[in-house]
Amino acid sequence: MTLLCVPLVGRTVEEMEIDAAAAAAAGGDLVEIRLDFIEGFSPREDLPRLLRSCPLPALVTYRPNWEGGRYDGDDAARFETLRLAMELGVDYVDIELKVPIIGLVMSERGLMSRVLSPKFGGYLTFGILDATKTSASGQPTLEELLDIYNIRCIGPDTMVLGLIANPVKQSKSPILHNKCLQSVGYNAVYLPLLADNLARFLDTYSAPDFSGFSCSLPFKVDAVHCCHEHDAVAKSIGAINTIIRKSDGKLVGYNTDYIGAISAIEDGIGGPGSKDAAVSPLAGRLIVVVGAGGAGKAIAYGAKKKGARVVVANRTYEKAVTLANALGGQALRLADLENFGPEEGMILANATSLGMYPNVDGTPVPKKALSLYDVVFDAVYAPKDTRLLREAEECGVKVVSGVEMFIRQAMGQFEHFTGGIEAPESLMREIAAKYT
Image (cartoon, rainbow, N blue to C red):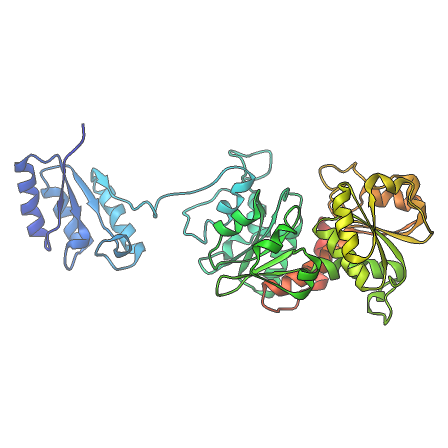
C-alpha cells in the first residue's frame, strides 16, 4: 500500500506539533518533519520533543539548500542530526541521492570510477589486498590506489589526465606519470582509459578538469580530426600522441613520439649524445619503418627530416604507399621484408604492435633478414625485450629498446600536461627500469 505522507513545514516546534496532530486527524499515514524549516533549530532539544509528541510514524528530512532546501550550514552537522534521529528511533530518514550513493563501474573500464571516487565525493571505494582476492570485476589493489594513484591526495580540485588506448592495461604510463606528478607536487592523477571511439570519449569527458591525454594505438591518427588546433610537427606528421584541453575547451594536439623515437635511434647509432650532433647520424642512411600508423608516421617524418632515406613497409600496402609518397620514399608490403636488402648497414624501426603484450611471440621481420641491419629499434616496450630485439641481438645487430622512446616522449608529454614543468628525467628512468 502506498503511504500518504504529510510534510510539516512549521517555523517552530510548536507549530509542527499542531500540524502533526492535524495530519493524524485528517487520515495521514506518516508525517515528514522538515527540520530545515524550523527557525533557530536546536537538534538535541527540539528533535527528541518532536519525535516523542508525534502521533504518526515520522520521516525526518534536513534538506540542504543545494538540494532545494533551507539548510545552509555544514554537512557534517547535518549528518550528525540525522544520525541522532536514527538513535532516537525515527521510522524513516531522508537522504539525498548525492550523499549515500557509492557509484562504481565494473570491469577494466570502471577503474576511473574507483580511483576518482574522492574527487566526486564518494563515501568509499574498494581496494583489494591482491589480485587473487577480488570481490568484483575491475577492482584495483589497495597498493595501487595508495602508491600509484596517490588516492589520499585526490580531491575536488585534482586534474584528470590519462592514456586513451585500446588495449591499455599493459601500459606503464600511469605508473610513470603519477609518480612524476607526485614528485613535483602537481595536483593531478593519470589513468589508463580504455576506449572504443576517440571522438565519443573526448565528447563525453569534456569537463575542464579532464585537462590532458596521452593518445596511443589505435587513435593517434584519429586524434588529428578530434583536435581543434595542432602544433606544426603534429600537423606535418598527421598523427597526435598528446592532447591538451585549453581553458576555452578547445583541444590542442601535439606529437612527442617524433623526438622521442628519433633521438633514441640517433643515440643508438652513434652512442649517447649523438642526437645533439651537428649532422644527424641518420643523414644519408636507409631506414625501413615498419608500420604506417601514428608511430610509423612520426618515425618516418622524423627520419626524413634528419636526412635519412625512408622505406615504409606495412601490412596494408596502400597505407605504406600513401606515407612513402608523402615523404618521397619507397613502399613495401610487410612480406617483402624477408628478402629486402638493397644495401648493408640499414636501420630497422618497428612501429607496429607486433610483439606487444599479450602477443609477445609476434615479430615484423624474420630472423634471417635481420643481419642486413646495423641497428634495430622497436617501439614496443612491454615487454622490454621483444622477440624482434632478442633475435636481432642474436644476429649481432645493435638494438634500441622502445623504453628509450617511451621515456623521451613521456618527458615531452609531462611538460605539456603541467604547463611547462621540467620532467624529472632521472626519476622517469628509475621507474622505467623498475617496471618495464
